[in-house]
Image 1 (cartoon, rainbow, N blue to C red):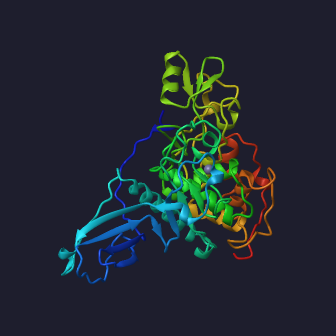
Image 2 (cartoon, protein in one colour):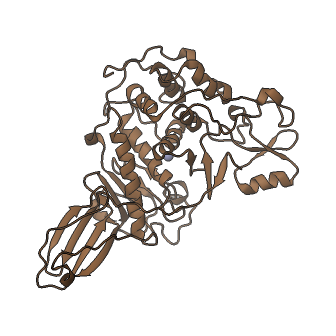
Length: 431
Ligand SMILES: [Zn+2]
């Protein structure tokens, strides 16, 4: 189904366990604590005497970068309201190495210790690493101070679901089986599920949740889990990770943020069904029908339930041109007879970057924790933050012209967006 979707495959990586708490203990009662370096190294000043074994333990907690990843300690739960922000209710992931103290009399080099992926601790360290990367990204945004970034506390627990509860029951089917960020539990609380849906090694899902956290703390209002909040979380997570493929396309699939349409099956009369999987695609061909890409906004509402916000944000925040798909079937046309009406050419003429997106988020849509609200903000579109406000920001902050934005949002996507109505000037007092 390229260029739209691709099969998900997991590539094991080796990453340094950076800035993690590491503890040296021995049978003589020593208890010495430090943090690993940015490259995962550590050393201790310590005088072993009179005991046999020492132990090094690394934990999925970091003080320097304000991240902790732990398991829930109190057994299965039926709903998220049972989760707390009490550290006593969680246990960090950890990995230990024991050594003979006799070997350490004249200094001991343990060499490189690799945590195998099969160890649960690998999950804790991988999640912590993704959270650190996301925090480093936010911390580098103009107007974001490290002191304003609350500590991120991630819960990732096998066996959190009671054995007698099914994955589609209330509590699990509507929430705990999904990744979520919950300010109500803690300003930095993130749940990464393991039971029902295992997201322990899905970096896109991890970073996606941090974007919700970022919105809650730094935008002029919290967009919550609406189309703006979800679309932005998908797009920004992809940009932070440097990949245009997002992992929210369904089991075993990745979806390309640079394809401004979804695939459907044309039965000769109409778009008969949406194509979401390789099986759907094969079924369409076997029936003698034609897979095609209807223009985004011309899509039948019965066939699509998501907007195109992440794709627009992606186009505005990456290099111009090189669209993976430039031909969409516009409303009222068929795949066989559309001709020139369906050829869009290179509609993305914006040479964007993530700095432009971040400037719009902080200096146009930002709130008090960043540089304060912009007095020249105009709420167009729907009430509150939405795609229109974001597009207006790209124009009035000087990152794209209204015709460039319209080429993406209106011409290619068919959305009813009028760039000429954006504020012409939206300088921020801190500019
Ligand atoms: Zn989300």
